[in-house]
Structure formats: C-alpha cells, structure tokens
Amino acid sequence: MDIIVNNTFIIILFSSVIQSITGFGFAVVGTPLLLFFMKPQQAVSLVTFGALLLNMMVIYKTRGMSNPKVIWPLFVASLFGILPGVYILKVIDPSILKLCIGILILLVSFLMASNYVMVIKREKLATVLVGVVSGFMGGATSLSGPPVALFLMNQQQDKETFRANLVRFFCFGNIATLIIMYYMDTVDRGVFEQLGYAVPAVLIGVWLGEKAFVKVSPKFFRWLTLGTVFFCGIMSVVSVVVK
Image 1 (tube, helix red, strand yellow):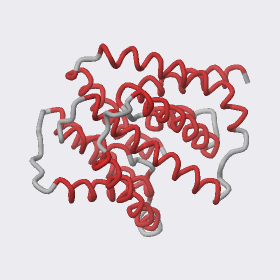
Image 2 (spheres, rainbow, N blue to C red):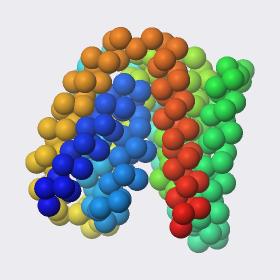
Image 3 (cartoon, rainbow, N blue to C red):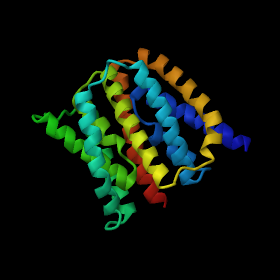
C-alpha cells in the first residue's frame, strides 16, 4: 500500500508541475502512469478531481490574463463534438482510431517544431472547429487537449495568455466530466481517500510549477509544450502497439 501511495504522490506531483507550467498535461502524463497500478475508473476519477483543483488554483493566479472570447467558443463547441466521438466508437475499431489520431498528433507536432505557422483568416470559425475536434477526440480517445494546445500555439499567444486560456478550458471540461461521471455513477468512491495524499502533491506541484514558470523563457516554454503534446501522441500510439 505504501508503494502505491508513494507512486501516486510522485506521479500527481510531476503531472501538476507540467500542467501548472504549460496549462495542460495533467491527464496526458498522469493517467497512463497511474494505470500501471490502478483500475481505469480509479485513475480517471483521481486525475479529474486533481486536475480540477489544480486548474482552479492556476485560474486564480492568472486572473485577468485570459481571453473569454476564445475560451467559451472552444468549450461550447467541444460539447457538440463529444457525442459524435462516442458514437464513432461503435463504427470504427477504437485501437485503429487511437493509432491514427496519435500519428496525426505526432505529425502536427513535428510541423509545429519546424516553426510552421498556419495563417487563419477566419479565426472565430477556426475556434469553433477546433473546439468540435477537441470534443470529438475527447469522446473517442480521451485526447481532447492536443488540438486546443496546438491551435493556441499556432496563434502565437504569449506564454501567460496561452496558459491562462488552457487552464480555463480544461477547468470547464473537468466540471462537465465530473457532472457526467456523477449521473452515470462512474465516480470511484475510493478517490476521496486517495485525495488525502493527492491534494498535497497538487499543492506542491503548483508551487513548484509557478516558480519554474516565471523563469522559463518563451522558447523553452514552446518546446516544453510541444514535448507534452508529442508525449501525448507517443502514448496514444504505444498503447495501441503494446495492446
């Protein structure tokens, strides 16, 4: 039991540091690692509660830095993409879908790493489309973060605005997820015991992340963000190959 507690603490701490710096990555990094010694329902419940706490803390620290005109269309549009994403799982093999999306994420990451910038003339329409794609990917594969992160990077937002926008988008997503989990009775009851040692890990992770964020250069911030997205694509591909 002590090994599980220690491993959970370290994973939550590490995931918290990554997300508090970049604005995303908590679920991408934490969930696959927690699944090594937890059931999926336990891992998802713990990550969702932990991410919600973290995002609320970072939202407080980044108040006044976000752009609601970007966040709300992204979030609302993502809700419309969830159902098609869930439905397509009945038509296409989930492994094939996850593999294709993982490869696509890797290709776009490589493209972004080469400093490629797509000129978007109709930003409002693009925002809605990215939101729908994010929701679709979330419903089909739980990979809702990369489309939004890559879109905001393409728009060349400064690191403060980028992080502030992302944490708000994911905070709304966490709340929606918990509501759905509650009504579908999929919240693992044991998560409340695990929060006893997960919450301190989140608090320490946010504190360390805030200290690091101030010192991180825009160039390194970009590479760290791309690295997190790349890791997401790698995990998606590897999970299918190993399976």
